[in-house]
Amino acid sequence: MKKIWIALLSVTVVVVSTQAAALQQADLSLKPAAACKGAGRPAPKMKETVHAETVGAAATTIDLNGDGWCDWIMTLAYPMNTGLPEYGAKEAILLGTDKGARTFGNIEKMRQHWRKQLPAPEGLVMPDGVTRMAPALVAYSSKSKAPYFIGFSNAYPDFMAHADSYAVYQWNTEFDTPQTVSNADYLTVMKFLRKQYCEGRHYSNQDFQHPETSNADHPLEVVVCSPQMADAIKRAERGVTRP
Image (cartoon, rainbow, N blue to C red):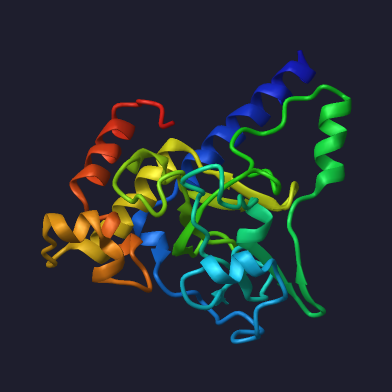
């Protein structure tokens, strides 16, 4: 009986702790508590096609994995036909270190799960997975070093086609890769971003269809304010699974 009681106590403690740690909009900010190191460094060498198709320079003032070093985030378009190049997520994000850039993903850790036939956590971003990447929007949390962000999508640059595809990610340090967050955290982050970027602003349908002309540096600021994104958030509130 004693062992059973201890086990139940442990469960109770975990439940209470999880509830206490629930993310709130008040925990979020558009600015980090401290600037990351290495901002402004030139982007590392990449495929010439990546440089040709990116919109502006790679962002270097955001620390996605929370290690204190600024990372490189490349804006990548998804191929509209088979004649155009494809890019993996590892070409959208390069992590900053004191020695320069590195790719992400703890492949050995993933292999251990595959070899043992263990289920890997849901929502992990595979480094080689074909993707497109919009200029990232970031929400910094007072509860964690790694921020929340949106940017990966099968909708970029066709912004309005799939508002549901703009998932919210946070860095999974165990597997060294971004991971989609829970539905509750998705709702909290998206509502925070809409409050920050949408209140008191008025966009036209044309702005929503072509947000890169309204804010070329951060078109997702416009996208999160769109009726399509509002509908995606309502579906999430009803528990409808996003694609």
